Every structure is written in C-alpha cells, then in structure tokens.
Length: 217
Image (cartoon, rainbow, N blue to C red):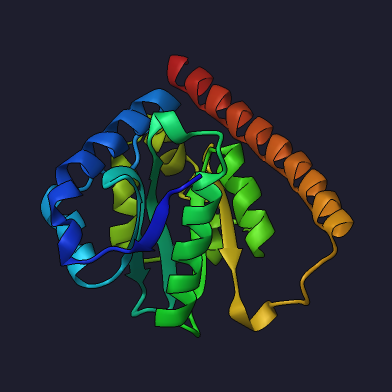
C-alpha cells in the first residue's frame, strides 16, 4: 500500500477541515462523541509538529495528533482517523505507531495514555506496550476530561465520579518498559486483555442500569 505517513507541517494546513469532518463522521459511526476539534486547532497541531498525517496520491487518508496534560507529565495520542476506503488495511496501526514514536521523541519521560471503546485501537495499543489501567492512573487535568462532555456516555462517567465508563483506559509508562515480548507472549497478553475489557464493560453497563433504576424510584 503506497501511503505516505509523515509528521504534519504547514504544508498540510489545507487538510484541516477534511480532518475535522472525518473525525465527526467516525464518532457518529461508533456511537460515541470524541472531543470535537476545530480546523484552527488541527492547524495549530500541524504548525507545532505534533501530528501525523497519511496521504495517498496527495489525498488525505489518515491523521492523529499529540496532546499534553499535567505539565507534560502525560501525553495522549488523540483523534486517530482512517478514511473509510482504507480501514482494515493496517493503516491505523501504522499511523498509531508513528504518532507513538513521535510522542516518545518529543516527550521522552512522559506517560502516554488513551481511553477508547475501539477493540482495534486497544489491540494496537497493547502491541505498542500499553497496559490497561483504572482512570485514577490517568491525568487529573480537568481540561482533558471536559472533552468527554460531547460523548453520549458522559453521564456514566459523572455518575461513577470519573472512576470508569464504557471506555477503557490504557497507559504506556516509559519507566516500566519491559523487553519486547515474543509473538506468542503478545497473543496471550492480548487474550488476557480482551477478557479484562469484557469484564470492565459488563461492570460499567450494570452500574449504568443501576443508576437508571435509581432515577425511576
């Protein structure tokens, strides 16, 4: 697949509006509300060299950017999008790896984290060395969590006092990096992680139903 993946710059400002549109469409398809970003915000990330863009014959096919929280103590790789025509090709994994490496280069001592409902993204994160964690191990920066307000599941987050939601939290801690696992070890780790996600989701749904019942009485 002849797709160019590189650090975005001022040469790519023209794609900002298309990127925001793809982000909005992806959120609608998943049934969640990722934090909305304006074209100006996306352009700023490009100008700062804090974004990865994927192009095919000069056309936008993917994007992801870096955000920092808690005075650079935490880094999030946000807004990952892949054009519908290129989903299932492994492009998302390539973009994720590129922005992950860019994050480590720019903020070598920072913890890299994310929250997601996408099993595909969880698999990519797991392969990169992320671990599933509770929300209490993520940033406490209020500006980050306010970005969840556009999600339809935000009431679950608030009712549980931000202890958990339908999203799964994942964290890469550079101080706890272990040697690269063998392929079989990776697969076993992924199977364990999937069981964790299923249990996590079940508990969240039970609490959500309990909260709805409480409102009825």
